[in-house]
Image 1 (tube, rainbow, N blue to C red):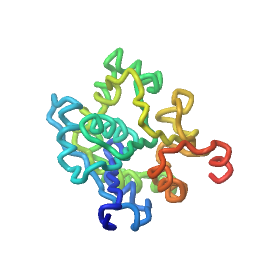
Image 2: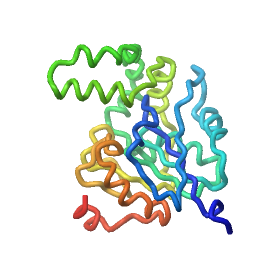
Image 3: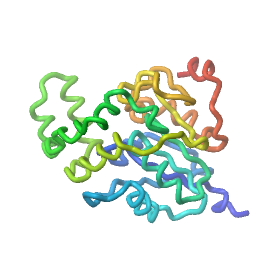
Image 4: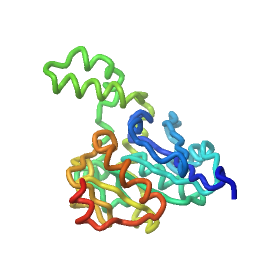
Length: 235
């Protein structure tokens, strides 16, 4: 078997509205992995999640790929995997089924209140940095500008709807789930069977990249859920 055949092809899917820059500090050993970045497509207004996943699969160019998705990207790679033979399926800061959605998202789904979110305001993200006051606000505005570049209203409306209405009643056992215990978007108390990252927030793929660079290679290769005490000691 040649070296190229031994390489594992890892496809990374960013979170809602984010671009692949969120993975800029993720470094996997090049003798074992080749990383490919996926980007969001603008959906048709009434496009189903299945049809969207099938469109995304056209960008998967290798057999038995590793799919890794963050947040809503984790939902999308789970849908993509239904039509692929994957080597490993990993989600980060995401959910495996409807039972893991927080109460506010279930309420939004039941009432339809998610339709009232002013997604059109994302078109003004470039102006946030100019209007921000204080170092913290300016840093947050720069982060939004750097990583949240998909501000198309059709995409945002579609993504929010399919996040809160995701039809997944049972978690797929092959999913390897990495989740921070300080995630306020998907609180850890709703999350089952995961590799817990002590102090990890919803954006830990950005600000805890050293943790991922240390542990992600072995997680990809083995799919193991590490001893929680060991992980917490080294986090």
